[in-house]
Amino acid sequence: MKSRMQPRHYLSEAVFERERDRIFRRLWLFAGLKTMVAEHNDFITREVAGVPVVIQNFRGELRAFENVCLHRSMRLQTAPAGRRPLVCGYHGWSYAVDGSASHIPLHDELYRFPAAERDAMRLRQFALRAVGNLLFVNLDPDPLPITDQFDQAFIDLMESSSSMYDTEVMTTTWHTRFNWKLGYENLRDGNHPRFVHPQSITKNVVFVPLMDEALHAEVTPELDPSLDRTARREILRRFSYGGAEGSFKNVVRYDWQQYVERWGETDAYFNWLAYPNLHIASSDGGFSFTIEHHVPVAPDRTDLEIYWMTARKRQPYSFSGTVLLSLMHGSKLVVGEDVQVMEEVQRGLHADAPTPRQGDYEGLNKRVERWYVDLIDGDHEI
Image (cartoon, rainbow, N blue to C red; front, side, top):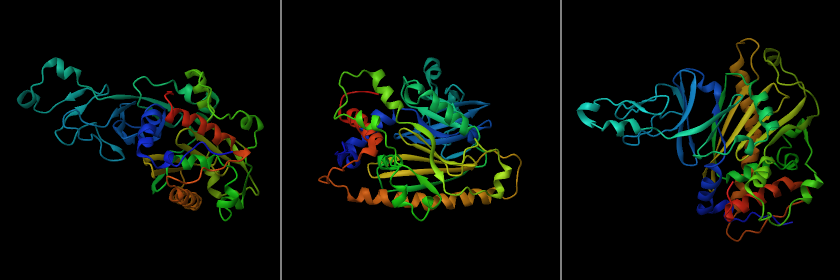
């Protein structure tokens, strides 16, 4: 069966802008870790679908605002993360928990805004939701309920596992040359590890491709045009899932694992995929976690932000930083193998490139494609 995805879906600026408008400015998106904004005036900054966003702690209340001063459009917080009040460095305007301009230096001498105008000044606020230790933001003024995007069982699973994350986190960003969708087509492909990762992950993990006859059978040439928004959101919920996806050939234990509170008791390789662009993995059965966040930058560019942390410490131990460094180096090899393949796929794309062929085991990718093409090329909304 031929894929529904055409080269333009990975190459076109117009398609990329429609994705921003119809997907990334409508859905709940991963925005960071709650532990990174645990104290008063802690903040993290993001760029979500081209919109600068700051998540700030106001004496225990977390709020998400557009990270742009109302005076001259200076970014309020300029670092990726830190601890400082929500104050503009250009002219000293500061903002309160409700987004109001709480202090404008020299207001009466220089600005002299009418009282009604000043009272109406508010930073644009975005919906923010904590799921365990994971923060999700939604730019839509009328955001869909998060349970319309993720089913409750998946939310519970993310909450349970992420609540076990330790507060010590290591992060990095890969600036890659591939379209963001390639990353998730690859992650939903249980057949690729044996060919792409024979010298790394598959030395000790066995992945079995999903062969779901019901999933394959339901993939029809087009979505039923009579499907209403409720039905389309039901399809959307199926794109996010998690659980044990790989079994170990040999269970390996490390000394550091005695110092952390393991999540669960299953010796398996765990994956969580949260549509559209969040991937979480535990490669050692709940002792440590890796977050991969694919941030679309352009049709052929994706920033791959990666976080590493162990499960929550039972007690401090002196070599915890070395453990995180070893986790980073271990995943660097696997991520590098995937990035190399996806960049090669991107390089092979051009306007007249052949349409890919898909096998029965790729039913989930077919389902996502059908929904995506209907959304991006049609006139439907999420």
